[in-house]
Image 1 (cartoon, rainbow, N blue to C red):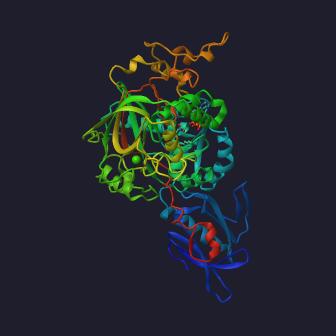
Image 2: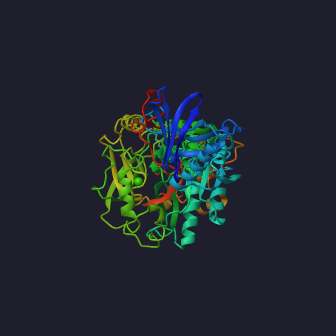
Image 3: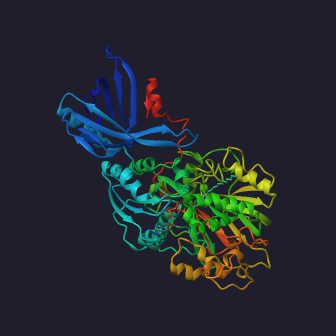
Length: 583
Ligand SMILES: Nc1ncnc2c1ncn2[C@@H]1O[C@H](COP(=O)(O)OP(=O)(O)OP(=O)(O)O)[C@@H](O)[C@H]1O
Ligand SMILES: CCCCCCCCCCCCC/C=C/[C@@H](O)[C@H](CO)NC(C)=O
Ligand SMILES: [Ca+2]
């Protein structure tokens, strides 16, 4: 039977007989018993078909084609559980169908390809790919060429690949080069590499729109190009929090089928203008100290965070500060409501309507949202002052393998708000309890010294008499910054300096860091704790301590769909149970 986008026929998979049906948006095949009765059905949404090829075709580990003229091969997304409660692994499913004639084979391939064009979301045709060869365990190139490139080729996506030779090359490329013709930008690397792409694309979009990123009050223009993340870094927090697993094949499949996940972004400003953007963690105190310490141990690879975390915990620091925040509407959601932002999240969908009221389709919102002065910074600011173990702001849950539910388990990816977590100074065991709860399902906010607030903006300043210029700047620590930026942020010390005695050996040249007398040189052996910490902004150290940050709702879009609820979606193991399945 054949209509425009519909087709039905008998097919064979191996020696078993099936009835295959294409109904436009769904492709399924049902095993038949000897009496032609239905046994079990396998069903694949057309939107999740990756490619259709004539003959018996294999893609991984390498492409093999046996052009049998009565066979066609369908590749599609297949899900399996990871064993953890959230996130599903996607693999490439492949089924070879035999039919009685070449004519029928050609009908199937033609109809499936036509259905793909009609019933699939917008898939990328051309991608710009940046590979950081030094990220994480330095496997970025291998991951891309062996696992990802064959899938892109199967899906007919053409790629321009750039293996970076220096930090910030990807960001600079995006800011300077014409991106016409590219549907999206893919980064193969970690959170630092993602951050480069984020800065490049946001900056490029504002340049084109004629908007000033330094102006805190401007409503920034959402980026029209999607970002794809192939995880190959140390933490891969953005990938984990938006896909639910760290797996290059899963991420490549989300890119291929053109999934779209909007993401909130915080802009961070100092008096003179924009400092950086953040999506996962803007953290002062413990997380700033851990990052600063870890930069000294880059040679340890991803383990440097564990080592530095232990060192900074043992050094038992707290910092004075004034935190001001602008609460988000408490009627919309709460960071303590024990919900999770999952794929198809209703809080985020309602936020799209609120954030872009003139657009029925978030994909075509770009012109309506242009160059408007924002009301986001209006409202009643709340002020708190005291000593904190850490002050953290995150636009999303920031879940990662170390903390599977994240810094703020009920935060939303795209609701236009961030969660501000204040951990007041407390005894070491209390703080350990707080940290430990990040690794379990116990509520880390249910502690007397912890507060969490859903916010639209946050300001941080030092108490009077401890103004920022009295303290050292941390220029030498900023791993990802180039010479120009370093020159900009290094300032001359006006206060007395503290130096790590052990690092002053004869014949050892003093580093930039040592010359500045940075307090982080002194981890444990010096008795006086530093008076100020630094800000960890998605893995980069900020040059300023006094900052103002605001959340820009849904400023970028990723090739992702949020975390799929493992309990709600059938996995491929269920096939054996003989029921109708969506794979
Ligand atoms: N070719 C290169 N040489 C040196 N640094 C690079 C290069 N390409 C990118 N970078 C920088 O490397 C930094 C870390 O990269 P990436 O995020 O991929 O790996 P990572 O191991 O997860 O690091 P981190 O955990 O610090 O983010 C990024 O900030 C990026 O700017
Ligand atoms: C006693 C056990 C202590 C375990 C403490 C676990 C706490 C883990 C919380 C991790 C949150 C990570 C948030 C993401 C930050 C990224 O932006 C950044 C860049 O990759 N990563 C880091 C480590 O700064
Ligand atoms: Ca958010």
